[in-house]
Image 1 (cartoon, helix red, strand yellow):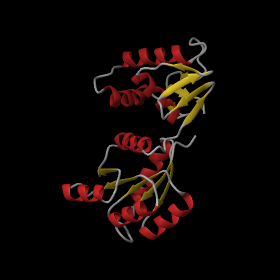
Image 2: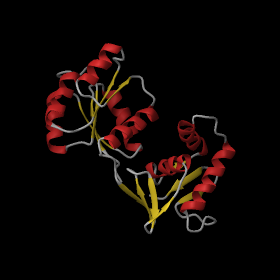
Image 3: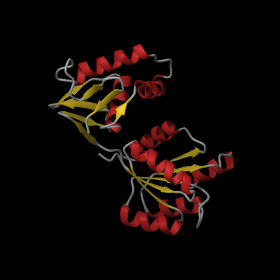
Image 4: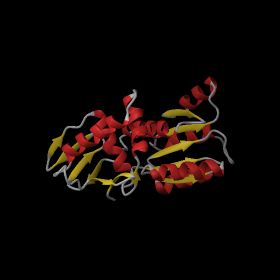
Length: 225
């Protein structure tokens, strides 16, 4: 499932290539343009859910693009630019931007802030399914046959990591990095084992023979695509 459709308005090919690949890995659909005219043409036909916008562009500038977008469309905009001084940030927010992130940025922080903006704008992905589970990403609820399965914050975050990387093997190191972001404290390998067991106990019909989150011996874990 595509979480949201993202338009990247950026004129640096290297940034476009790397960021587009990262967004797709995280479950987003990503397209890019390098100037104001192309941006407005794309928005008119494709109506993206969120726009990531640089200030410096091949044609026009980010501030004028943001103003043009906000005058005509109800689409959230996040400035993603190397201009991180106070004046630039204030100007961007005054133009109607929903957030302002300075380069260089931490990829997982960007994803977190994108999802926050999407939720506030009512454009988050809605319902996602995994086996016989229904995940309401707007409410942060996991349900089976209409009954809610209550997960802790870390259990839910761990579940979302698997959902966002369906079909891919996730190493324990990668999972530890993801949990660290939410926990805000040291999380060790034993803690990860405990949380995976707790999560399986809640979401698997037979935790001893898991079908949703499977172990890939010697490599990590995988949620089936």
